[in-house]
Image (spheres, rainbow, N blue to C red):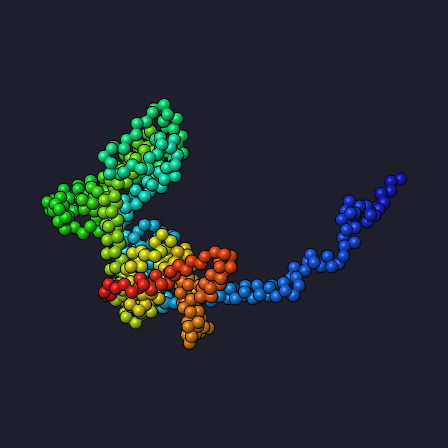
Length: 437
């Protein structure tokens, strides 16, 4: 006889709920008003009012974002004048991208066909070395003893620091800046060797009659070289300037790596000695950039004609360090219609790509139109609001100033009425501009 199957007996609810008995007793005994307070996050009528205001603000901001995005894609013609490209090399002397109403998009980096990059690298060489040295200037154990900032660079002392081998030996292999400085030095060495090799190749080509760059007397003379310095290798004087600069940086860096110490006095002397070379490299770089970019701007201006050119907007993405004045802004000031210079050349350190640049343009152009329609210009107060929304001034600034001053005074502090940037900009614009093409 087969044994019978065990009979299923469901657990009693009390057994299931027993471990949570105390929590359940609290729940069952809680006042409903307390429970309601926990889930009624919209609160009373006052909190509901704030919640409704917040919701309405979110709707307005969302629709405004869509609005400026679309406006920015319909403001044409447009030139975005960048100093670098996200999907391309940096330091090429600026890139211009022209958007037109026919849907065309033309992109060009005019200075690519010049020696701009060669000059710019040398112009930034000493600043690059400062990045390697700077973080350790407060650490005397890594900088050859106590640092004396009172010494004058014009002092005729050599600046050499006598190192105690017993003290410096411990740093020879494990200084914290070794890897970084070695990477920097490697790049400088490669660049110097590439320059020497290019000179050797061109010299061989000249000797074989395959390349003509003017007579040897002209090449070695005093600035009589007829070769265009924006084509091929830099002229002899410039090559020597660059090689001297590169060599001095290599020698200093190798000394630091071999001793395990940064000779700060020698570094300052290095900066002082290389300033004329740095200046020459910067001058040569901006000349190559200006020659190439100005030619391109003139070509596009003639191609577009006066009517289309007058409607042109130029967006110049920047960083704060060059936001106030930079070569790109200066170039377009020479060619925009004079009454459009302040309104149609836009610089900002916000855009990180062309999409953000166009949305920024949509914000500026859209705000200008909205300000005029919404606030008008019939009274001084209306004009303040219109101009505030249409410029780099907050639309509430005219109301914020007295409110802030009152708050400062009410807390027992003196009010500082600084000259506003608006006044300073207005005075700056009174200066005479160069003639326009």
